Image (tube, rainbow, N blue to C red):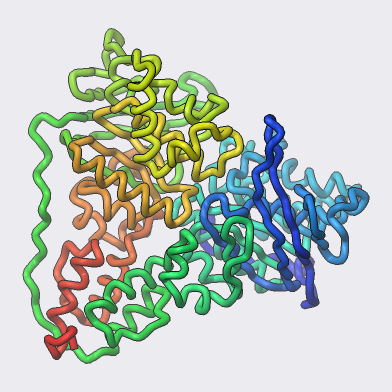
Length: 600
């Protein structure tokens, strides 16, 4: 996948007009099988001008995705009116024109890929417009060139990475030459390189004159937009520039949101160094502001990591693990090659790597969902490479929460979903109810508020909580988490991290795969980095994150704290190694400033 995306061709440029999309007192509620309705939008009035770049943010369940589906008539209001380029979405005869005006790129690209070849999928929408074959071919070629996928035109989409599939989905939208493109959580499941690529494409589309609307939980992505709209319980709570919206951290918290990571770090540092200026929203801006303050340079001793060494007999041991998908067929694909890993009992360990590096495949070997084709995997007393091992018993010891929570939810009601596993273990009556309550409260889901909710009506973040609670209800001693915070709003994100910290304190062994480096720094002590199925880096979190340049070449990133430390070192600061938390950075910086009072 290319890192430098090309600006869309001239055919995609539109003149600046006004009021491309208008919401006038729009209300919408989802109907349920029992006849009740769940309110999603409440009397929303909103105008989006042609050529704007708008970010829509809000807590899970705030109405973001529902609003997005009103933008191109996938949903129509129960009350009020939505117009797109003057066309009323309630008029079905106008829907074809509306679809051509507003294109959608969804969180999961496979949801909108319908053909067996990339080129055919990109052509699908324009073919339905009834265009001449020569025009279709020209548009498909332009769209594939714009997203850097021309070389993949004859590849089956299912053989592409998630990031590449996202580009194919976008190309299909671009080929229809819409005036507006909506990205609905389009970066939620991508690795750092994939996220940057999509964000660069959004910026390129905006520069070309398109209206760009992004729905996101990543506050740093909202900084790229001209305007940020904050939703709360189906209503517009804030609407303004990023600088205005992110100026009040306390208000954002009440709305279930947070500051961008660099702004949050600046706020933490400002408590110790009150003269640090306000409005610092990015790591480079924070580095520049710190370096501009009066300071001196001193050599500080190396920080000592308060971590125990890995046990001689680890709880989890992997040796020379290899795995090939579709082994023995022409479509065979090597996923793991000679992977070696040790995890001590009670440790917290992160698996890092770009999309397709083998993280999820490795995790599925740790609880026996996949059995070793080559090498050895041992978890506790269970030799998972031995065909005679009781894998079902091993899975009771090791719980796995998938990256896509809907993949493991099958009951109609939330309470029944979480009770399913404990019920199979023999829990009944009050004991079962207490276990379900405990698991739900542990992930921040009120028992009475959610136990009778329909699982299909939950938001993506709520489904993730249910999936986690259903595993925790089994009381495993090892918990495997594949992208545990993907799809969660900032408040739920903070809450889940706090719950996982509590689980660490109980002695539970945690293994998580994540693209969120702040989570890794906060939760884990050790890291294994995978690349193309190989385990290539292994060590303490601080030591691995100190190799920022190498991580970037592997398609990864580092926590904001590490980025600030790198920036200051580049300006001549002799900061000690091992700084991965805001607290550690604050303590180190306090020794560099001239006046000991408040640091200055």
